[in-house]
Amino acid sequence: MSKDGTETQRTDAFSSAASFAGPPASPRFSSVTGSAPMPDVAPVGTEAQEASLDAAFDSHPRPRADPSRAGMLVARGYGRRDWFLRRLLAVSDAVCLALAMAVAMALVAGARGHSWQEYLLYGLITLPAWVVLFKLYGLYERDAKRLSHSTLDDLPSLFHGLLLGCLLMWCWFVVVAPAKLMFAAILAFGALAMVLVLAGRALARAGFLRLVSPERVLLIGTGKTSGALIEKMRARASLRLEPIGMVSCAEDAGEALGLPRLGCLEEVDLPGLMVKHRVGRVVVADAEVDGERLLGVLRDCKTVSVKVSLLPATCSALGPSVEVDDVQGVTVLGINPSVLSRSSRLAKRGLDVAGAGLLSIVALPALMVLAVAIKLDSPGPVFFRQERIGKEGHRFTLLKLRTMAVDAEAHRAELLVQSKDLHWLHLEHDPRITGVGRLLRLASLDELPQLWNVLKGDMSLVGPRPLVADEDMMVDDWARGRLDLTPGITGLWQVLGRTSIPFEEMVKLDYLYVTNWSLWGDVRLILRTLPVVLRRSGAN
Image (cartoon, rainbow, N blue to C red):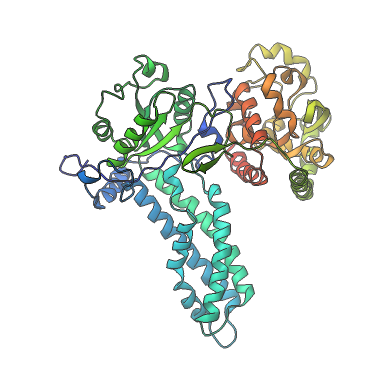
């Protein structure tokens, strides 16, 4: 909408992001739960903030749609929202790289008769090349493709880009600069750049999402996973997605999803509808939209700068490790093979031993202090021992710091009737929890003794949730595959909400973790666990 009140069409590129959902038994799991969530941010602070940023978007000139290109699918530019974010990330990268160069040169490079300021000057000349290199690695386009994108998703490409960039910068100093750059300076710059660029990108995204209004989403078609996707959009404010309506020929579809039905796809003027409702993204449920109609939707979305995501109906159990393949122009989805090789098992075990060993040494003084606090707070042992079901159904004894009264298990049955979830005991205020125990649970410090279970091999740092025998009996059929890997201290369930996630969805998250395991996936979940613990998300 232009400032004089007239509607202008904007030419833009579309991008399709294939979503995935959990196994077909439940409608609750969606692609959003399998993706990295955005950092939690507050809603727009004031109308003035939002208006000022909207004005900045409007000041950026946008080309009108060219009628001669109406049948084409390739647009000439990004929408205003994505245009602004891409440049914000590029500026953040350049500033952080410059800061890393300045610190590294000041600490290491001032030698061989040349001042560190001279080295820095030659380094700053390379900043445009760094931005081009990051663009080649796709570090500025992924936010437009995905419904949910976190800074951790940038880490593999950023690491590889910095590695190549540092090598090229060393060559630049050898060929052009008055003196070669010492290896120690390159190493210091690479390490600082990794930390600063990641921090800068996280702050840039968080600030951007705080200032802009939520992205308005239009759903086209219906499917088994549509309801779950809409529910996730509404439940996670950090995604900054606002479903505003749906286009479907099923007259009762809107009521089922709690969205207004805006008409049938074959009858509505889709470009006009999207401009009228200020739609930023369209999610297409392919169960109702065939190939020809889908191409028409893509063309319509292109003419008004609207991004497209596909919500596949036949890929419910694939998970995030699906590879998009191409066979002579035919698109094929490659499913992650259900194989965990010996080298993969050794790598996972190596990560467990190294991580648990280091954390045990660091946590030992805290454990001693907590043990004294538990003994002074209530009578009973320091540790709570409980039998859990582990890998391939083997039973083991799980260790935790005691957070309840000694006779807590004797009252389990009578409290189960008050549980929020009939599958397990979930109370808003459990009367069995002690004073110190409540603090331990809020900070997740009661889990620290499980590091011993990891060192013994009964558990892993990352894995499915270890269930008690009664809960394990409720898991059957395909979901038994969750026991193919060793249960973990953290995992998808813990990162995405812990007790706020129902039992059935927790089982499906465990299933997806097992069928899509990767070593980077484990590292990523470990890194995502710390913010969740600090925010006390889902702590019971």
